[in-house]
Length: 487
Image (cartoon, rainbow, N blue to C red; front, top):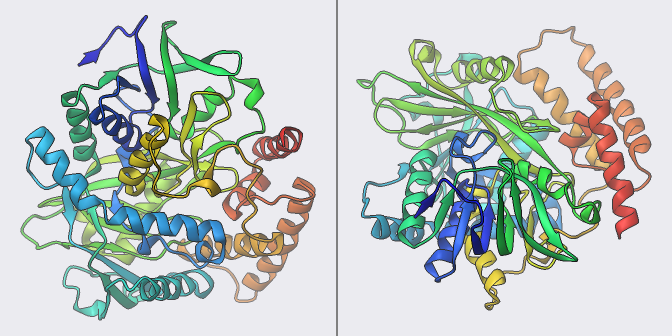
């Protein structure tokens, strides 16, 4: 059932956030007979799910930085296990809803190493992907990019190498959201249209959520799964300040383009390794005559609700240069913006959140949709007191800032990625300048990191944003100070 008038409603579990993660958890709980409601605005103004390419990829997301830390390895392993759940997850959704059209929209992933990327990122990440595939004995094959018929990049941006990963597909995120909602309702769950203003508590226990409408929802358990917007609710409980890494937004812009349906298009995801603080350029087929384009990631203190001209033009320029030159004849069906939830230390926030009955399932950055079947089951088990299957202790929300890399390594990563943005944007500068700029950036980032905190250094993309945004830098400093006081 649905409710347009939530006032006075009481639930066993209230899930705040109606993106893929929130709906997946609500559905999993409803299947087990729990009286559960999922709260969120129907237009999802700050969600990540609505703008997602929905690539079901673990190995395609691997970076040399990720596999260099224990926490990164733990996240990677969760992704590998989540991949194995998707076939059954989609099949069950079809059975429950009676909707049997396939949500999968891509057959495997083609990784491209092109001449746009820099060695310290693209080549290093491409090598890390191959090595990780070998470690997990995951099938892949090297391919000649010249044999990819649809691909027609600028000759100076042509791919140098390629590999096909047959086990990494993609789904249509919009249709997935619709199907999750339908399955949730059929399972007896409730969808509530509204937005949380504050958490309500009694002593050290959560009691519910007050809405911006003035109504209050009561629940024995509350789960914050509202992505980057979850921080707004956390801030209404001063006692939690500093106990949990703060959240900011990784703002991404994507485009759905209408291409010539008479020209056979790609059937697989086409993508580069993650690069330049972002997720790499990627194209996802979206049915006959449509393709999804994505690449951008900009760290921002607050979620964005409209796509920026800067990011949209950058994305389209990259697609024209690196994928197919005649994409400029395609029509733009829609330009979307999404907000990836990014914790200040870069790692997920999954588990009990410091008050009796309060839980978090966010901070998943680029991996939330892909991890959704696994995290939904694991969180439901924890909420219901069942036996758990996965060790999520490294991602428990109540923690000191995770320091996965040394300050020197973070600074070096920030320098390399910032320089890479220049190369990807085709900067034209005198031949000697890159070395001069690199030296200046290294000295500047090192000095800024030392001034930001004596002990902690945030991930490279957050460090770079903080250096450019004094107000954001102050948020980081205040979080570190509050964390010391709390822990």
